[in-house]
Length: 96
Image (cartoon, rainbow, N blue to C red; front, side):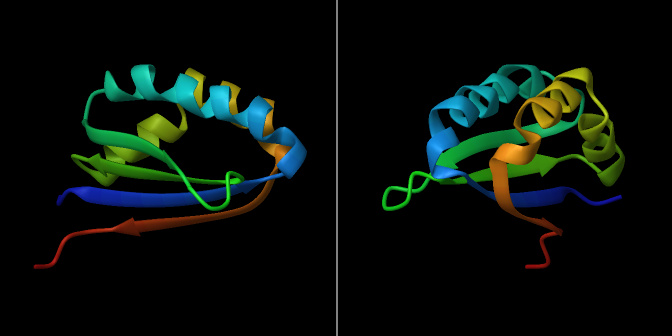
């Protein structure tokens, strides 16, 4: 199976940026050590600090699915659930 690229865009409540930001940062180290994680980067919008974007590359969809079921991901999701006001996740493969 081919490599999977993920671009996940999250918008958080303005009053929750300082709560959510450390939760997002806390995902980086354990995720980068996961089997199949090729790249995992977090960005914050310069003009709108409520917007965060993850750029990820995974060896396969199965590796991504394992990540989504990991303890650290589930803890993060439980901690920030109602603080996120919008979320879009693109799962793509490179074609050129």
